[in-house]
Amino acid sequence: MKALIVRMSSIGDVVHVMPALAALKHHGWDAGWLVESAAAPLLERNTSVLRTHRLPSARALTLAAVRLTTSEMRREKYEVALDFQGLWKSALWARFAGAPRLIGFASAWRREPLSALLIPEGASPTREAVHVIDKNLALLRAIGIDEVGLREFPLPTSESEAATVRMGLKSLGLGGFVILNPGGGWPSKLWPPEGYGTVARALRERGLEALVTWGPGEQGLAERVVKASDGAAVRCFPTTLLEYIELCRETRLVIAADTGPLHVACAVGAPVLGLYGPTDPERNGPFSSDDRVVRRVPLCSPCHKRRCRVHEGVMRAITPTEVIRAIDARLGLPLPEARAV
Image (cartoon, rainbow, N blue to C red; front, top):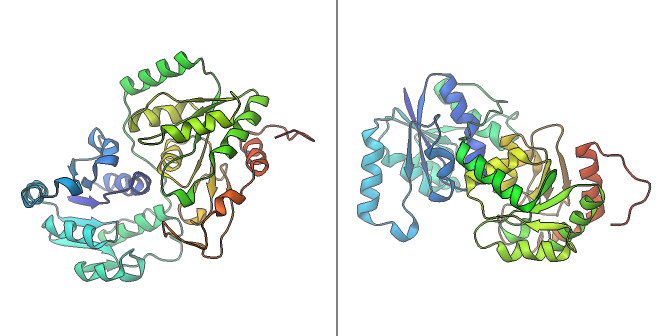
């Protein structure tokens, strides 16, 4: 039995479909995956994935490229295509796969509701599927798989990436460290770099070092955190996505907003502290009962608009003091009577 997973972006969303990949494997299915380039490293060397189909970039989306990707998918003779994304684009690509069955979410559960017109079999997750991971797992009920509640993430491992990370940490002289990830995602979901700088100083008082991670185009943002920390934080060496996974396996804690790096850290099993505003952590936040969330709830919540006048600036209302208290609680550190932050 062969299934095609259609979840093209983003990195965090791809991570949230990985338990569905694990469930398919447990039940004897081979799975291919249609994905965009940014998240492809999570899948291309992944032994749980039968075949990774890279979606052509918008710049390279020619008729010839569409035909090539379509023929690659059809050669695999998938029995079912599963549209986890809920867009016109994902529904169309799922149809291109040529599978006898095409399953996706019903209109009310799709980001673009009218795209359900392209989906012959629409599924409606039941009320217990609160977290997006469970929503994705619930889609598999249409093929007889009920694994809602599963938290298994078949991430790739690589000794070469792990060795690179160990060398990088050694070069920075880091021992027990905490990852601060100020970037990723839309600006309205991010916490100000000055807040991370204050947190880095508090970590130094607790005998912990702060490592500021960054992705493409975020080096300047990382430098702002380092500058605001008065020397308490260091900027991380450049990392690939797979190296970031290995970095999360080494850290004491990851502090980030609702972005791909946070969701990767959750999947790895690293201790995390999530900073939330417009989006709902019950839906897509940390799922371990040990992890912590600090949140400001805007009137528009939950809101998934990249630009919204109502929730604009809400993340700035989260105070460093709240974040530091959550760090102490997550790491089991004693709460001081008074400590300057």
